[in-house]
Length: 114
Length: 114
Image (cartoon, rainbow over all chains, first blue to last red; front, side):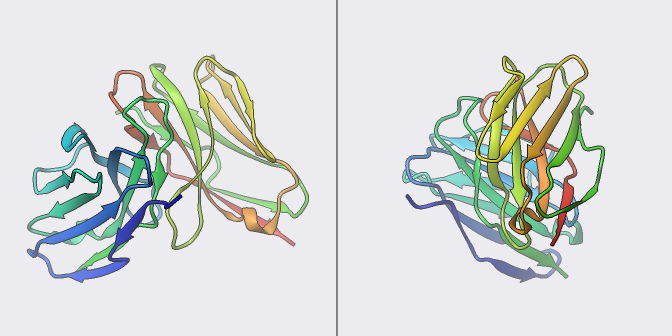
């Protein structure tokens, strides 16, 4: 069984640029969620995708957007990068959108904005 | 807003002793709770979960206790090993949310002394 994989592992961008992060779900999982984890803090929910549609969003501005593809892989796009966007971005997948299915996380993409 | 929090930011235990990590949650509507372990450079790893209709659940060397009266969650690790050293997060899922939109606490760092 293949776990959640994310790419790239590390990324450095300049303020104002745009970035795309990628995620492949764990085999058999059709729901993907994205979280932002600042250094020394717990992950914060960005949004979730189910059947290629966003079905929940946290307190993040519209410049954070995403996609889910028919094979359940996903992208997180961030436009107009700000210094505070520097964080570990985690992708998680689960089997369906039932609220009692545990999320399984990838190892994240470490984004640094300079 | 309501959030999950932790009482002890750092816990140091002797190898072989039992560890107890505590967590307070504030949303009485939360119906599902998960403990995650996060090692340096990795994403959160699922340890154990519990639903609100239970007060105890056991896994391999781990036990989660849920006290809904005082909104308290704890993770007990038996015979703590050096490999248990990591940051532990509790997370709650609100019953009103669709899907798995978790709110995480700030984490407790567990340090195991040989």
